[in-house]
Image (tube, rainbow, N blue to C red; front, side, top):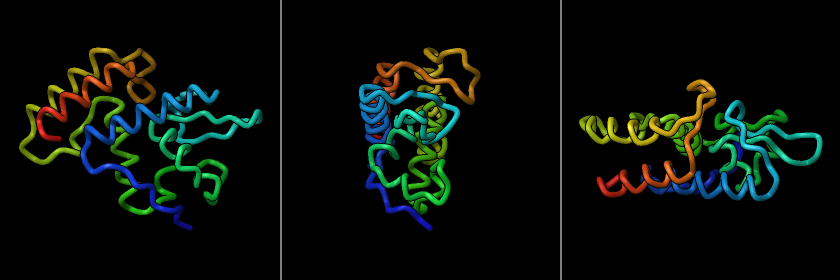
Length: 144
């Protein structure tokens, strides 16, 4: 079963801003940010979510996933790619969202994000919201 499409921006800068907005909203609503899973329901009715999981949480359809843990693979191809791109940008990797030949932009994006990463190990790490917004501003200034 494929979950309904989540309407997400094409531009990486806008996509990153959506992820930050949704993650901040998830935190404010009492959910836990945890980069080890997409959307993980908890016994108290809240969820543990990563940045992309916060987008899935906002969309609400994750509850219809075939398993109790929803992931991008449960969505259509476009939504899957955009959710995966959010997770890649979380760790400073934007190679999957920028065109071939954008090496300088990719390197600078990585520098911005990685300069502020916590030390939870790359797979689970994240930077501050301000850092992601600064990285999104940089991408936008370069037309992405």
